[in-house]
Amino acid sequence: MRIITRLIAVSDLGSREIARRAGLPMQKISDLLSGKLEHLTIDELRLVYRTIDPSGSPP
Image 1 (tube, rainbow, N blue to C red):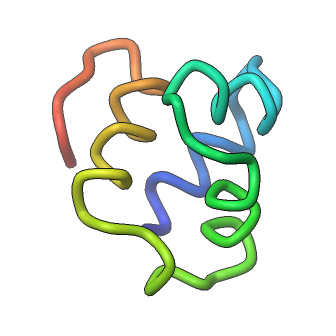
Image 2 (cartoon, rainbow, N blue to C red):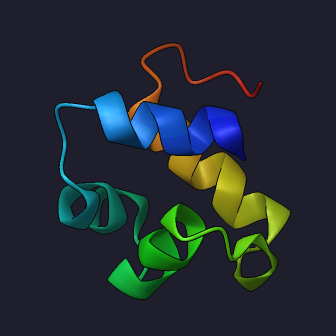
């Protein structure tokens, strides 16, 4: 989770754009950034990671 939140923080994309590209509600990204990891499935976490990581490989 820390890797994903760090990537979101340093990404050129805003949280809204990441949510849009991942096809997730903005609330899911907000939950992730506020540490509410239990609100996301592993598939959603992987989707966010692939959206913001250029290589697209999971951590």
